[in-house]
Image (cartoon, rainbow, N blue to C red; front, side, top):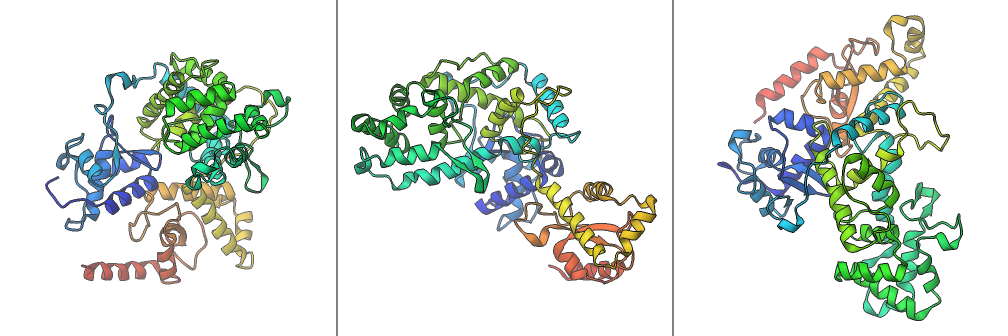
Length: 472
């Protein structure tokens, strides 16, 4: 980079903008292609390293306040990746792995499987297309996993473990509690391990843990192995010991390793994932294969799916657990057109932008509801306005697209995630004396709407121009 040095805060700002805009819009805005090999890893997600480093230049202390272009920055390990690593970030590099650890990045049947996934998600969402793993039916079904892990780690409290606890039963008690999570108050249940006593004690994955509570010798062996798992012991040896002590209960072992590090280890249900791998063309079988080598291959296989998903232009950064969810949903979602089996529908989760649209609609409905019902009466009597709930949502969505997710008056990007409430989108009447009707609505930042109040639109724009003229 022939320019000022980027900072860690600048990189975090670039990541925040990436998250707000989404991957496709971010790359398009700054004129970059997606990465193939070099990805910045942050909080379990992957970001294209070269564009992130280039945009971080906007916040360089001695810079000129602009992002670098693709021609001003080299990708790969020599420039962008190196500078990100110098700031303490992790960046993937295909040459970092040994020959034995190289995994084929292509998933033979990915395109066909992904197309079917999109079709089935849209059918389940009554025509709404799949947008990301953080919203819609996928988030409703699968979004509990990071929350479950966080709750389990809170119960385990491994940072406070010490050697004298081994054999006392305390480690075992905490481990059992971290498995048997069923908390209606926060709508959280552990579905990753078969622990509930529905089909008899003999079929519970953690049966050996329960029985060891009153068996001091076995209890000590189990607590030693679990202690070693979370306190830096040899992972391969710990896996083998736990497999023997737990009766090769693959889902339970995978769950315990998932709690240790969700960026490397994933939960497993062999029957379901074997079916997903067959559809994807991945030649791996996990059923009755509970050993360290098989588990490593399982995590690598899901990693190859993550790489394929990362190359889908419209997707936000895809984490390893997102790829895990994709594989699971691939086999669990009913095919489009198939009859409903009658199970409980968990609904869907709105993304940050979709939530903002709903909140703006509520704001408008509340405002007109305070205006003696005048606007409500007009909607009912003048069908040409088409401002019922669905039409209003569609109008707000079109305006956000038209405005490129930026404030109509300042051009400042919205922060749909609420990290800065002043930059949340807010509906504004262009003519404050008029109605919330098509042609009289623009979307501005909340602070702009507050400042503008009842000032005529032309006058407020004039005042903004004056501010811009004297701004440094």
